[in-house]
Structure formats: structure tokens, C-alpha cells
Image 1 (tube, rainbow, N blue to C red):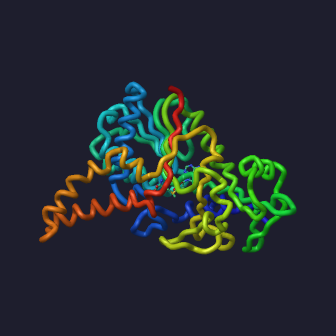
Image 2 (cartoon, rainbow, N blue to C red):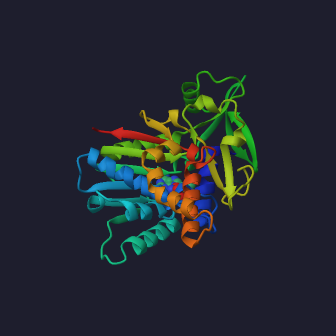
Length: 339
Ligand SMILES: C[S@@+](CC[C@H](N)C(=O)[O-])C[C@H]1O[C@@H](n2cnc3c(N)ncnc32)[C@H](O)[C@@H]1O
């Protein structure tokens, strides 16, 4: 019998874990599609945000951007291709736990953005660097991959999810988990099941300590209050994926699929400003960035040529990033650290 978070940790990141062996974002041969893999427009919007923060911080040099859970490096690549004002001061650190993904990312970014330079302003590390730094910590779809503990309120008190011989099993929660559950969900009705984001909270604390001045910006699916999960079945917010499809319950065949959880942002430290990705991208100018494509497509809609078809593709990508029933419904959470 293994506590669920320990089981999922091994299933994702152990020697035979999903991310250790093969799991990756992307359309070609990937297991799930993320915003950076959907369109370079996402990186362009994040680059616009970074330029804005650089000015707000009074143009620090170096301006350090740490991207945690950087996967194959697509966001880093697209940021370097779009960044303007802070370009010369930017030092970028990709942090990726999977050795395989880290190697792919470093090769992709250096080959695409710095082929002519002997030294690139980019590093790839296995864990967060030592601070303090002035800059930004970014994470797209990292928090949902930090396995939660899972508890359920019953007439016998709080029970905790375990994995036993390929099945779910519920056992009395340790005192620490029961105390945390009562603290984050004091109004939970009997039967309510919820994640306890212990690992995500620890990661967020480390990110906050890393920054002397700056911002933490995360993009993820989830809810801003744990209460929003009370009425939802466990299998709806704790999911598995493989090859772009839902992949059943997570309790057997560890290492063969992604295990991911909607993030209850109220369990994380600090007081982030939370917005929908659709609104956040609009505030970073995605409409203006795609105006040329809209005009191109409208002008040639009657008899499209290859240029207008490419413009249509850009508009489709922008629509996917901002769809309020898809990626646009993700939560963008921003923490401000220092002044
Ligand atoms: C869902 S993928 C997202 C990849 C990329 N950010 C994207 O949006 O395409 C999550 C990534 O986070 C990595 N990861 C998980 N825990 C991590 C940690 N503590 N530090 C750094 N990377 C981590 C995984 O190996 C995986 O590559």
C-alpha cells in the first residue's frame, strides 16, 4: 500500500517514470498539447510581459528569467525570438527535472536562437538555481504535475487516498493531512474529496525565496478556491493522459501515462493576482499581434492563396490559445515579490 502522492511521484519521475522515459508536450509524438506547443504567439505574449516587468523593475542587468518545468524548451525559444527591450539583459535559466527533456531543450534553443554565438545567455538546470535574483520565475503547466495528497471527508473523519495492488484504497489520514484538510476546506460537506497541494506549496515557497525582486507567473488549469472541487468527482480533476487521450485511472501500470491534477490556487502561499488566460493574452496584445493575419485573410477570403492560408493558421492558433472552453480558461497567477 502506497500513499497516492508517493505513488504518483515515482510513476512520473522515478527511474521508469513517465517523464523520465518518454512523456512530452507537443503535437508530433507528444502526449498532451500545451500553450507553447500550440503557437509561438504564446511566447510572444510572455516576451511582451517580460519587457513590461523589466521596465517596472527599472531595467535590471542581468534580468534573470527562470522557467520551471521547461519541457522541450519551446517557450524559451519563442521568448528569445520575440523579446525586445530586455533582450540584452536577459539571462534565461530553464529548469527541468527530466534529463532527456533538458537535453532536447538546450539543443533546440541554442540551435535556433544562438547558432552564431560562442556563449548563449541560457542555462538548463535540474533544479531551481540559488538566488537571490532580480527577474521572473515562469511555469507553464508545472504545478498540475506536482503530485498532490488526496483526502476525503467521511463520518469517520478524513481519509487519504492510497494505491493498493493497482486499485484505489482509502485509509485514515495522518494527523498532518487531516489538519491541513480542515484548514483549507473548513466547509467541506461529507463526501467531499480534494487535493492537498503540499509539493506545489513547497515549490512556490522556494520560488518566492529565490526572488529578491520580481514576479512569479504561472499558467495552469485549476480553480481559485478548493471549495470549487467539492461537488466534482475525483476522476474529473485528477486525470491521466497518454498520446493526447485520457488514459483511465492512475493506479496501475505506473510510468505509462501522465498524472495531472487541477490546481486549487488558494492552497498556495501569497496572494497572487489571478486572471483567465484569454484575458491575460488580450492584455499582452494578442489581438494586435494577429491584426495583420485578420486583414490578410479578409482581403483574400474569396480566393485564398498560400499566404492567406498561413494567416488563417495564425488566427486558428490565437483562437485555440484564447478559447474559453480550452486553453483560454487556464488560470494565470502572478505573484509580486519585493517592490
Ligand atoms: C506538463 S509538462 C509542461 C512542459 C512545458 N512547460 C510546456 O508547457 O510544454 C511539465 C514538465 O515539468 C517537469 N517537472 C516536473 N516537476 C518539476 C520540478 N520540480 N522542477 C522542474 N521540472 C519539473 C516535467 O518533467 C515536465 O517536463
